[in-house]
Image 1 (cartoon, rainbow, N blue to C red):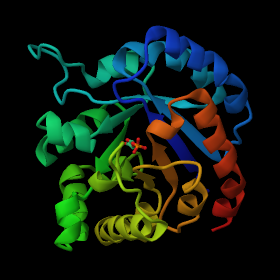
Image 2 (image 1 turned 90 degrees about the vertical axis):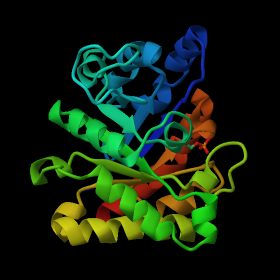
Image 3 (image 1 turned 180 degrees about the horizontal axis):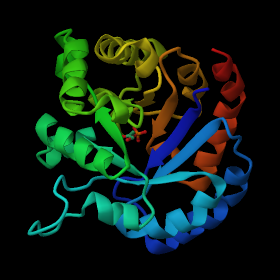
Image 4 (image 1 turned 90 degrees about the horizontal axis):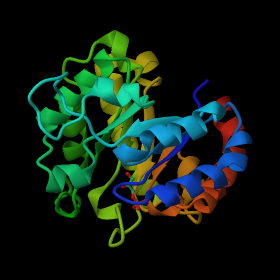
Length: 262
Ligand code: 13P
């Protein structure tokens, strides 16, 4: 049975003191998470280890927000997949729109990072999304399917089950984002699903976890999680405080069983 996924990237936020507080405050909520709900947290690099030490006992997975595609060598300032693994990460977020827009992340570099993660047994969480212009031009579908296809280039059939894809419309993310409606989120993810089914067949494609992210908050989480192509939610601002993350856990929990029946 496919689990429901709920996780948060903290982006470049929190001090060490705030992380210690979060670690303490989230314990109760995580200890009551059912097996059918897979939670995950993606802190900034310096906090990955302490978060992993605090939450993996509850089955919560921890990730990093980026890696280098190279294994080791003269790449000043970069962090490799094996270093991420060494500090307790099992997920690597790749290709977030903020990295694509501000740090020269390209479809090609996303693909190289996906392959580097998979080769070490890490789970790549690949972010794809359409821009506001692409939405206006009615090419959202083409744009996100293209990003997915390039990200998965050369990924073997054996590895594909270990991939997570998050549809995060660029226009829906962050302070100035316009939250996607459940219909828009479903449209994006069903386009991705369709492309995956075409490439890998239905059985394998159905094993790939599909997330929605972009202005998820307590008021829209339940409607989003009920969409047929949405396996989980990838949250920013609304889950940064432990109380916010705990609230979202309690909101999606009731849907774990009904999703299992699908
Ligand atoms: P917000 O939930 O703050 O819009 O951020 C979403 C996001 O970028 C998750 O990766």
